[in-house]
Image (tube, rainbow, N blue to C red; front, top):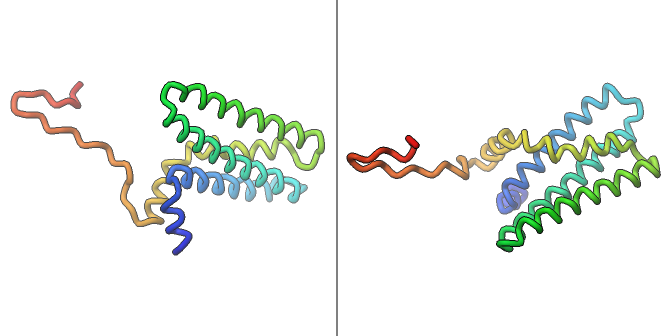
Length: 156
């Protein structure tokens, strides 16, 4: 129960992204079990990529939170955060390629869980709602009712 309470206090979107990343990593691990000969290096590269995606998503969330407080500097702050994440990704890919510790393509596959999780977000959102026994946290705002003789706002 303590884990569920801690998860409720966490940024909900970030939690849903992390759940999607783990799901994507598990699917890739299962598929790789049937297709790959070197299971150890495959698993190492895949899960290191997923862990790097976790770190990237946390950095992205923090960058966006700080940018929202900055006002006019927000665009530059978001751009610098984006460039920093992809520069770091490029450096790690070069190091992995040079040292041949793991397959850089498998690492990149794990990192792409950051992108895939955006498509999985509606599914993970529903799963989190069921896990926490909650309704949709972000319902659409209700439109004010039109007065007699007025045209409802939703018509335009």
